[in-house]
Amino acid sequence: QVQLVESGGGLVQPGGSLGLSCAASGSIRVIYDMGWYRQAPGKQRELVAEITSAGSTNYADSMKGRFTISRDNAKNTVYLQMNSLKPEDTAVYYCNAKLLANFGRANYWGQGTQVTVSS
Image (cartoon, rainbow, N blue to C red; front, side):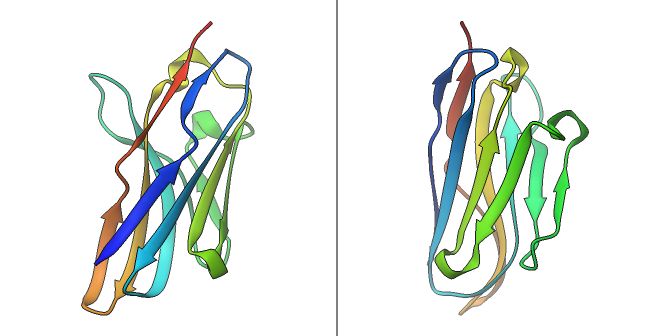
């Protein structure tokens, strides 16, 4: 059994900052890529940012320069620091991990955390 538990969502004013974290636990042998996705009402889920186990990162164009993804491999945790937030960043943010568990390779999702950017 593997779980991804997210924390850190909430309400923030435009131009503000917010940090998210996601901790993976369970019968994990290796975590490969970790990432953050988001889904706004009426829209498809989209990539926000992803990071490899070696620390290489990839961002969606609209997040470059505002968002920073990082991870702590010892804690099986991925972070997302969001700055200069805009109302269009409002969405449910999901953590993702591609990993090798005791039962094989799998792609896991967190339960999602709401981020609302509004004055």
